[in-house]
Length: 307
Length: 124
Image 1 (cartoon, rainbow over the protein chains, first blue to last red):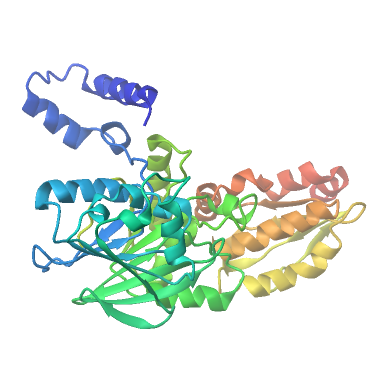
Image 2 (image 1 turned 30 degrees about the vertical axis):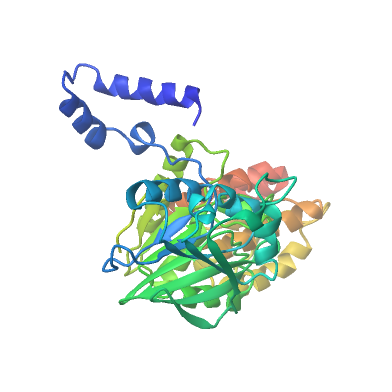
């Protein structure tokens, strides 16, 4: 977020607060929490992909399950270390793919440098380990991968096969993206979360549509790449490897998923634009709803969803 | 899918009906094929009258966009018209109003594509 955007939000907030007599911190906080549009009082942020999935009944020192290691991984790790200390942590990381925005947080993922931490990195790409080692090497980074103090293990997964990892049942599915990407279906204690980013749905193959409907079937939450408009994704940005809010809603409706969280926002969009897309998508779900409602949200840095 | 074609001079108006979704889109596409083949420079203009379409999905929208691209590539013209309110909202949310010729009525679409077609339309 730029200074200009901060100023725009402040002006919008002050205009809205005019004449309201917000003369105490409590009154101001209540006003900000309840009366301002999200795009004014918050920001969707700008970190690249990193999602934590946690079991609600998991013990405090349970392993951490992450999807991707974009720049958001740095924020996650720093908060974790501040709250729970430097060592003794176990991470299970599922990689959608190894494009730079999905691995760029790892050189700054502090637990990786600390002995006594264990990091398991899973993915379906043959180049999984190579991508991480290359990133943490000259000339790209001054600290070589070999100097990371944690125990780091790479495991190649087979798409379509079910694994039991960190008390979750996990299955990967190949997605259409440059060099392929993989979505993941996580199941635990009767709940299902789908992580499906960097996935283009070309909508020209009924069998492929049906396969994704089945992959998303009855999910409690689908985290879905909605970077482009439908028009863009079918025309000027065809084969760029991303999807749209429209396809996300449709697949979730067909799969009877409970929640759709739009993810991997277009980096050029500001908070107002993303908020507008969210409002449009909520409206789209409303006007196309059959007998099943899908709750719509848009991911933001620090967001937590309880399913 | 029956498109009930109506000819007005050098334009043909096609009127799909019902839902255009992942179930019906292939049939819609197949029905368009012969009409798109004639939508070329010196050939027919095509207007898709969507007054009878109650819902269109991304699959259906893709068929429309590809049809529009084919027409343009052949030097022809294609427009859609008379969208029901829900379908218009779907077009707007999908940003398809930015990439296709969308008119409020069939007459307006014909007027944009061909003077002789709109004259024929007005003549009844």
